[in-house]
Length: 213
Image (cartoon, rainbow, N blue to C red; front, side):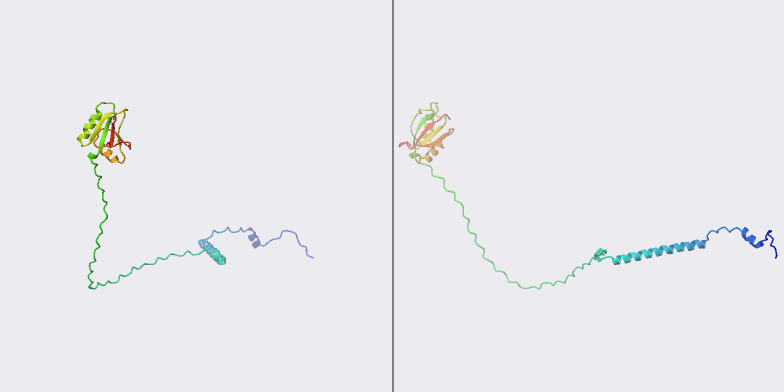
């Protein structure tokens, strides 16, 4: 039998070279590689957008009618065409009948208010009177007597009153108020009162008492 020596085994040189060779460093990407990567990214982005739009379309189609957005109608403006004026014909001259004059109504006279005539003045000759001085100043009855006689009245007598009065008074017989007011219109600067006195006896119609005022 042959003995195998345990000495050093000589390895082939080619195997030794492989063990000693270092790996090559990585090369930087070229422009072609970059463009290819960018193109691939763009394609993926576009594909993602298309898939998203398609899914939204399918989801909107599956929504119930009440949830779907209602399109807003766009108002349309209708153009108003003005009406074309039709040609007017000139009126043909026609003979109209002459209107007959209508009789005007005669205005009826409006009723006019008639003013009653003033009452007739009493007859001075029928008025007879007496005068009493109640003023407290002598001569007042005589002064009044003179004034009334000058105006056509009849003064039968004058005397002094038993009591004094602040204001004068004219007593007149029944239904002789008009005569009393008529005589008073001739007595100026005196305050006079009027009172009916049926006790006056004829021929006296009035009894005048002169007061202080």
